[in-house]
Structure formats: C-alpha cells, structure tokens
Figure 1 (spheres, rainbow, N blue to C red):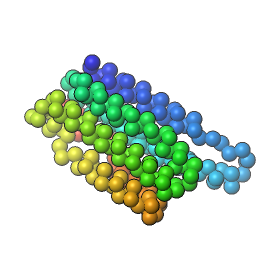
Figure 2: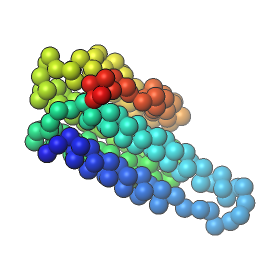
Figure 3: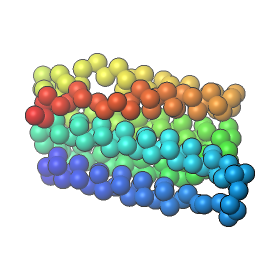
Length: 190
C-alpha cells in the first residue's frame, strides 16, 4: 500500500468523525439566550474536539507525505491511532452534556493521551521502517511537542478531580501548542 492510500483512508475516517460530532449538536428548543447558554458546554466541547481532529488531520497529512512506503506495522499503528480518534465523539459528548464534570473531563484526557501515544507509536513504526539515518528521522528531530503533550494530558487527567477548569486548561494548552501546523516534514516531501 502506498502512503497516499493510507493518508486518503485516514482523511476519510477523520472527516466522518467530524461529521458525527457535529450531528451531536442539538439546537435548543426555546428561542432565548438562557436556552442557548444551556448548550454552551456542548458547543465548547465540540470546538475543542474539532480543533484536535483538525490538528491530527493536518499533522498526519504532513507526516505521511514524508513516508516512502507503508508496512503492515505502519498500517496497524495507523489503525490504532484512528481507533482512539474514533472515541473523540463519545468523550466530547459526555464532557459537554455533563458540563465538564470531573469524570468526563478525566476520560476526555485519557482519550487525548491515548491518541497522542498512538501518534507517537505510528511515528516509531515509520522510523523503524525508514531507518535511523533517513530523511524522515532527521525531519522528526527531537519531537519536543510530542513528548510534552502526554505530560500535559496526564496533568489534566489528575487535575480533573481537583479542578475541572484547570484540567480543561491543560487540554487547551496542548491544542494551542499544536494548532500551528507541524512543518518539520515539508522539506522531505517536496
């Protein structure tokens, strides 16, 4: 399988996940500001998750453009990532519907942590295939953001039971850190 086919499949899955998430948004039955404010947690959860899916889509795209070929291990690592991303809709809905309660906030963090580790696993599978001296590995560099993100997720998970707003701040901080597209692989793919 070529990297472009794996990328196209992943693009389709992420597009479906975004579509499923938006279908979970329900308009209030009353035409009042109070009714609109009652769905604000659901909307804010959606926005954060939309940004996260966009980050994964963008970085996955840039990374896969730098891959020469795909192995079975890379395919399974990619499916592992897509599995965790497929749980975004559930975790988002539970967090929003329960107005950022501690347990849903922690579960959201667990899902983000698992997706982050799955992305690192995918990178590891690619590094193993491409080789330690490859252009891919040189482009990957120290991967500082990829190493800091899991630490912030674990912090957010723990803080969910102390102060859910601080937990959410950790999740937003990671998204803010990654919202600028990852351009490390562009030179390899050009």
